[in-house]
Image 1 (spheres, one colour):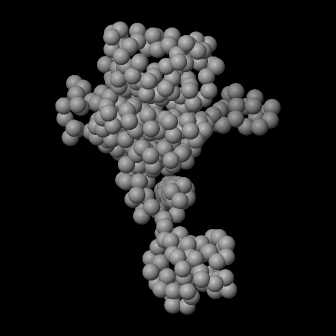
Image 2: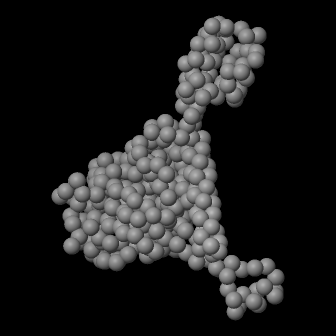
Image 3: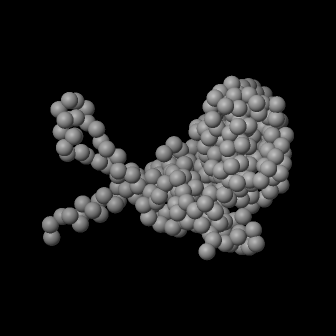
Length: 356
């Protein structure tokens, strides 16, 4: 039987073990003759979107799912929301198996996809809200109280009577969030909620989610390509690449795990002192008398001591590289590791097929 996670914080709200999802993709060849042959002898290749994920998320956590396009982030959220079935493995959310699609489970989670609309395009949002009320069987008092609270927080109350197609992208996303939260879900899956939004709209969505999650203590899994979303909202980060989890930990821990360098900015007392700095590290920027160097993390103390012994320095700033750069390096490293694993597996298969 599904369990009530609100009564037991020690039990993970989301629990995944060995979850995989593969697709057979038809390989259409170029040319008329090849197309005709394909009618009778189709060729397929297997795409492994998710490759054996293990994950546990506790109640009240705000977890970021990061990864390049095609990494398996959205597929994982679709599996957890019951939109698709897995190839193998297990998952439970609040004690429910998502792909069984039980009504009791549907009433306790919500999925918001930044590139998909759940509102009727030509109708005012308030009409779609009423439809959600009927779907989730929300009584009038609870519905109106929740609707008014959400629209007040998101500052969209005056837009409820306006057709959705006439709203800006940021306003539509606020309406989508309102619709998703009308039934007060315990778990919220967010897939790129700020995609395409301007800086102001992104900030407004971030502030709302931060406030709402803190007030309601709900569990949220977020995918986003915007590092500002992650930095503003999430303490825990899961990096997924090539369908595998490559990192699970704190946001600050990503830099320690994937960045081997520091960015050192030096303010020299004299312009002519800025010579032959390449021997100390990679020169990223030079604006006399200031220079910015990229130095291996372990070499920073020794390098600074060497520079200070030879030059007069007015100011020194040592900082981590930008988070976007570290994340990109992490993606590249994970892709390289997966290619090596795939290559090793292919070699093993080839060796096994050799005649003895």
